[in-house]
Image (cartoon, rainbow, N blue to C red; front, side, top):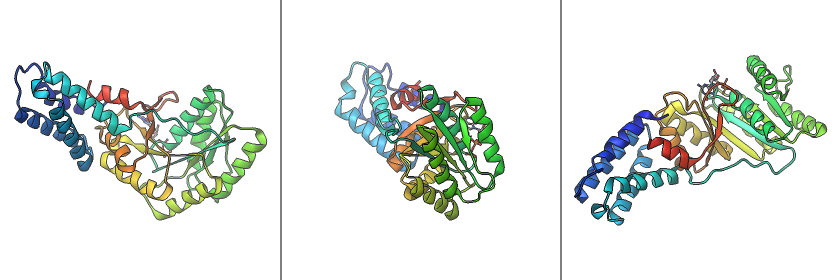
Amino acid sequence: MFENLSNKLNTAMRTLKGKGRITDVNVAATVKEIRRALMDADVNYKVAKEITDRIKDEAMGQKIVIAVDPGQMLVKIVHDELVKLMGSQVQGINLKSEPSVILIAGLQGSGKTTFSGKLAQYLKKSGRNVLLVACDIYRPAAIDQLKVLGEQVEVEVYSEPENKNAVQIAQNALEYARKMGKKVIIVDTAGRLAVDEAMMNEIAAVKEAIKPSETLFVVDSMTGQDAVNTAKAFNDRLNFDGVVLTKLDGDARGGAALSIRHVVEKPIKFISTGEKMDALDQFYPDRMASRILG
Ligand code: GDP
């Protein structure tokens, strides 16, 4: 994960490692390299600038130039800033109401349906009675896909293949969940290939109708800056609660993971690292920073 970024950051910092005497000039040059590494990884320009300005201030403030091991000190400073950038704390999902409604939003192909199946399994393993809801009224294949996943993870799937009203399906599913004593319902919605008004209107209407305790925005981490722009568009409209980053097993460059939290001010809550149902993890900013720094 993020090998390129890891290599570049480490190369940048290596110039300070083992140096007996360093100067402010060395530090400034290293910080510039760090900024370049972040931008090469598709980190948003403003984010890269802000974080490296802070790294520089911290490094100077902590008198890195007279430290015994300036390289090590800088690694710690960079690590801590990466953690801060990604949100510091692990953020769980809100499951207080009963049934708790979790709405899944995102573009087509981002990994929504796969994530819905994974989340269903994850919550089922923690002892909850879960219902999956297929709310994609445009692609019958999407309903079938969710059914297959539901079978795999042994979670019931609610669908109304003939109904073309997503709001109604969601409301009916909620009613059904109440009747059946389900504790959590996960509503997988339709996505489009790009942000469009009709999709936003539909999902906003579903949200309004079923009042989820948690709205999760799913995004493909391989799409870099686009991931951040899409997140912004969805957040402006839906005011979601958290982000799910998918396809981190691919060769994503790291930009989305590092920028999203800062740009939309919403935490990353889960990461998806494969097509299998157990390839899901909660997002730990600290672990991610350690991974990035190798
Ligand atoms: P949706 O259109 O948003 O519902 O997206 P899907 O869940 O259908 O996922 C689109 C494609 O990406 C499928 O082929 C999934 O198997 C694949 N996929 C989803 N999540 C991941 C992931 O974390 N890693 C990888 N490698 N593939 C994934």
